[in-house]
Length: 382
Ligand code: GDP
Ligand code: GDP
Ligand code: MG
Image 1 (spheres, rainbow, N blue to C red):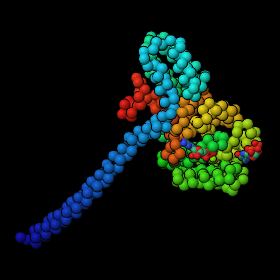
Image 2 (tube, rainbow, N blue to C red):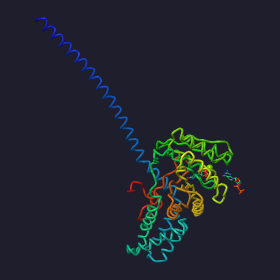
Image 3 (cartoon, protein in one colour):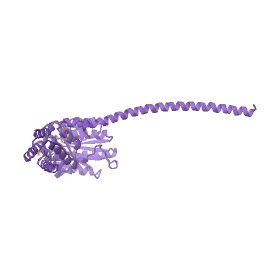
Image 4 (spheres, helix red, strand yellow):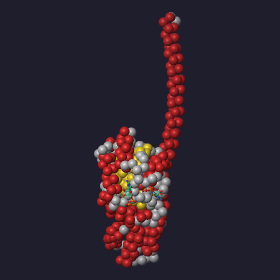
């Protein structure tokens, strides 16, 4: 073997050895990578499963909570109607009058009740209904039709914000004790959970303990709060809050206000001033004005809304305390008559107890199963 051949052999050996090393390293890397990938995949898969589980059960929990909250309204409304319909009664004017009475007593209000009864009469004719049992499903359907035609049908369920127009600014108003501050805490929590950065402004500078109460809610929700001393000008707090939101790139601003009656001219002017001052920072502010109403006040809530609508540009209604009241039927005329969306409903005092108002959930929770009025369970909710 000449020199050149030896050289060639060495080179070949070296190349082979190197290739082997590279291959080993390669194998090693690919084993490690595939280990990591496998682990990551299983972590991702597990997380996905958990998320899917949460996503799947969240609406069930919400529905059950709503159903539980509406139980008094349900026994007031649906059970009374079913009581009338059992025993093979004939459908006649007398029966429809009795249904009308129950609807009015269940806080559905005269105007909306008449609308519903009118539709029922039409359906009895059109569908040639004869047995009283058939009325129940028809009534449920007609109430659903009212809600689904109202502005309350199109509620944003995912707390979306137009990212080109942030911060989205919300002013929350209403009379004393309806649940404004509590609702702001819950709303901030929901926005935060959907990945939004929130700052709330404590513009109720009138009530002594208002700052402390809102601060507790801001801590629970894990969001920023802007506040000033008791007695400060609420408009200045609103200004500070929106200003801070812009400089810190926040997505949502929610302003709490002192409780006020619509007929106190000076307090209404104060609201106007707040809006005016907010516009200095963002032209469209307040993007939303939510009127908070207390469902336990029944027909009074509608009256309040009508009065407030005369003096403020309300973009949405939040109906609180639906849990435990027998007056939950009031949602129906509010959605139907006022033509302002019922955006959210309060179903308890905890931070997770604010739900997006959903007509399907509401009607199911209230009327239950079509045929016999038994409670709807989520697995048979289509
Ligand atoms: P504000 O004066 O309008 O700010 O009302 P607050 O937020 O201080 O609430 C007044 C009371 O209503 C508090 O005791 C709250 O816990 C209660 N509250 C608010 N929302 C709900 C609700 O959806 N359900 C129940 N059960 N209580 C509520
Ligand atoms: P009264 O029925 O006229 O005595 O009114 P109130 O007892 O509700 O309040 C007395 C005064 O406090 C009112 O005239 C208002 O100027 C002021 N006031 C009441 N509520 C508020 C509020 O929410 N914000 C502010 N800034 N002032 C308020
Ligand atoms: Mg308050």
